[in-house]
Image (cartoon, rainbow, N blue to C red; front, side, top):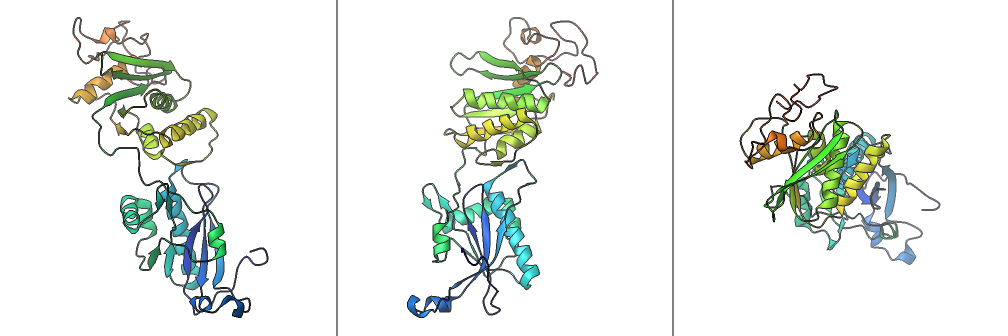
Length: 338
């Protein structure tokens, strides 16, 4: 390694590919492996090495996404290498080595099949690939001394709603309110957490979600009307975060990735279209979060409830507290109540 970083390719040997190192500094090596040399005793090889390194493949420092999952990094490396080997030699790899290590030990073939079925990026990267996929590294000191790629296959995020606490979140750019509300399962009373957060509605609602993960360690279902926030939460677990110029946003994303990646209890996140009159408790209870964000109210939702009744809030065209008609100006009222 100290004297020779690459070799000339042998036209009689097929090409192989292997993943090396650990997150977030993944790279892969295009190489050839001479099985004939391995059958010769070491003392009789005359300095010949069965490993012929053709090229090193690295990830770009500037990724297309702010949050990238480990499986997507694998897919990017595989795709880059397959495109390059076609340009270089006009063929595909005979074998792709994926020596993935789990927290519980080495990955099995069944686990790898499940990973490929669940991940769309890997499916595209391995499209039309007819070679072998190996879970082991070739017996060479270069591969043995390098850290093995570690991957977490078990996810704390549930794919279906949980029979647990349901938290509704909302935010407003006009009032700068960041709101979450939930029904306490013990007292059966509605509770709320309202804070003022400077920035866009997406940043304010992301701050709400971070507070929810900080406050509740038990299983819960999260309902948000922001497609951006729902997408960020669904991708946050064990993701690699790219630094962004907005310091407040970067700190929130860093907290979210850490909270979800180290979380033990499951959670579920769903996106609900905002301010709809659809029936059902999801839409009805989400109006409570909408009411708490009203910029012309102090934050209480009592004015939205029928007197003496514990029912979902009725959203009028006028603010029930101030009696003022909510203006259509997006700077004053970016999120209409009707």
